Length: 601
Image (cartoon, rainbow, N blue to C red):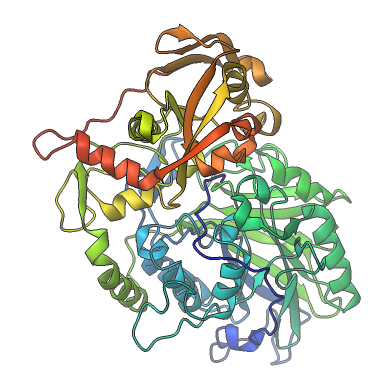
C-alpha cells in the first residue's frame, strides 16, 4: 500500500550482502510423535508429502490488535450479508499459527513483506525491534522485503537482519543487545548500484527429511516511487518477473524443483471479504491489478505465489505462461488473516504436484487464547513506551476515520490537511494557502474508545503517532496554478490511472471528481476553486505537503517541481498542535465534513 515513508534518522551506507543463514532444520517445528508422510501405511516414506505453507503479509509492526475499522475483516455470510469481524494482534496470530501447525510435521511459515515500517508507536518508537523480536517468536522462516523495509534505508534494514543496537539511539534495554532477525529477509530484485550485487539473499532453501522448497523474495519494482529518496539511495530495483524467473532457473539447476515466490506486490479482488471466491466464475476472474500480469509472466517452475502490498485478502488461481492454474494468495494486513496452503511434494520428481495444491484464508480471531509469550513481549515494550505514548494530545467526540474509510475524501484526511495548512500558513512558517496529504500516509483511524486508561475521546500521543508514524518533515513550495491542476489530474492518470490516489485537501479547495470519465479528465478542471476563486494557471501558489509528496512521490511529478522550498515542522508535530488548539475535554473535536470533493459516479 502506497504510503509516506519514515524520515531517515542516521547517515546511511550501502548495505553489504548478508552472509550466513540459520539452518532450516532449526526453524521448523519438530515432528509430532508418530507422524508419518501422507499415504505411508507400512512405516516407509510415501512418494508424496504434504507440506503446510502458512503465510501472512503487511504486518506493519501491529503487535497490539489494530483499533477501530482498521482492526476488522469483512466476512460474507451464507445468506450473502457481510459481517465485520474483529481480528489481529500478534498474541492471537501466534496462537492461530501454532494451532494450525499441530499435526503437520512438514510446516513452513513465510511472509510477503512490509513486516515493519509505518508501525504504531509501540514498535515504531524503537525502530521496529519489538516486531522483529515478535516474528522470531512466531517462528517465521522467511520473508520478502517490502517497500517499507526501506523506509529508514538499506543500512537500517541490514541492522534488522543482523542485529546490533541503533547507531544513534543505542540499546533500548539495559544489558540487552538487539539480536536481529533469525529468519532471512529476501531481496532478489534489489541490487547495489555500484556492484550490481543483491543487497540481501535473493533466495533460501527450506529443507526437512529430504524435502526441499526454494523461496525467492522480491519487492515491487516501483519501490523508489513510494519511498523517500534517502531510503533507496544507492539501490536499484529490478523487474519482478525477470528476477523471479532468473533465480527459479538457478534453483532448478541446483536440483530444487519446488519453488515459492514471495512477492511484495498485489491485486484487488472484486470483493473485500476475506472468504470471497475469486475463482468465480472462472480461474482468477475475480481479481485485477499488477499481480495478475506478474503471475502470468512468472515461469511455470514456480509452484505458488505469496503476495502482499495491497492489504487485500484473496486466494486465487491465475494461469501461468503455460496456461496451467497456479495459486496466488494474500492475507489482508496487520496480522488479521493468515493463509494455509497445502503443497503436495513428490519425492521422485522433487516437485510440487500443482493439481493438488489447496489454499484458504483464515481470520486471526480475538476469541481464542492469547499467546503468553507475546503478551509478555508487548507488556515489556509498553512499559518502555508508556511515558511518551500516554500523553494526551486532544479530544474527539466520535471516531474520525482515515485508514478505515473507503471514500476518496476521508474525514481524517481533511483533519490532517487542515492541521498542515494552519501550521504553515503564517508568513514566517511558509505562507501556505493550501495543503495536500497523500492517502497512503494515513495509517489508522482516530478512535473514540480508549486504547488504555486515558478515557474515551482522549487522543494520546501513541494514537496520533499510529495515524502519522513517519515523522516526515513538512515542506512549503511555490507551484503555478497550472502545476496545481496537473497534480490533481495525476491522482487519476499516469501511474495512478488504474488505482487512483486521491489527495486529501485542506479547507478552501474544492473540485468535482467525475469517475464516469477516464484518465486526467476525471478531474473536472473548470470546477477547481481555492477559496471560491478559479485557479489561475499563471499565478504562483504556496503549497504545503510532506517531504515525500514534495519529492514527487506516489506518481505526483508536478508536486516535485516546486521551488523556493521552506522546511517546516514534522507532520506529527503539526497534527498534535492542531488537536491541542482545537479541542478540550468540554469541547471535543467532531469529525470534519467531507464536502470538498464532489464525486460523480
